[in-house]
Image 1 (cartoon, helix red, strand yellow):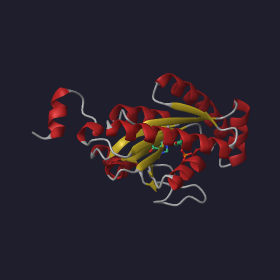
Image 2: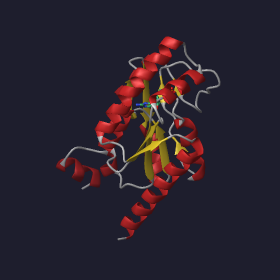
Image 3: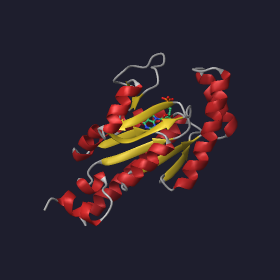
Image 4: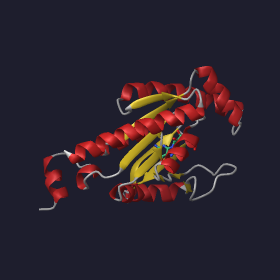
Length: 216
Ligand code: 5GP
């Protein structure tokens, strides 16, 4: 009997039951403008990890590159990917655009024993936790609400109404993250270098624990 079959007869299917867990799935969430992108890319660099490139129906912003920052696709193609079960998770973010994590690159990276880093919202993180109970979830918090609003304005990618909408969504997302139980750690980004260090330390601790548990 196939191992996957065996597990499927006993309970809900999860990807981690289908394949034994290798590598580490790191999910980083946090409000827009909180510094997630820089943190995530530094973690990828230091751990020789891989960044999960999401698919999105939103348009590319200035400086963003298709295939590097996101796969920018239209609604019809996004729907085909949903129908073909190609997403590990997907969600409509801010009630507007759709975002999803392609499943195949994640499973390939984990099977190769690598750290796979996802920068996704809380709805997505909850879905990943359900499928991969062993994921490591880190939520990046702004030092204060005033600071978050300041950061959103400084990015100036959007007009004031859109910024205020993002701010309201962000405060709701923080509350949801704190209630969800999906995140292992909450790290305040009062200083980007310090926050990045903290996330890397947490990851080292987790990887050490995983290595010790596979030795026993
Ligand atoms: P932005 O449009 O500013 O790049 O991203 C908006 C939000 O969508 C961010 O909170 C980001 O973490 C989230 N996001 C990006 N990719 C994905 C994804 O594949 N799935 C989900 N659920 N959220 C995503």
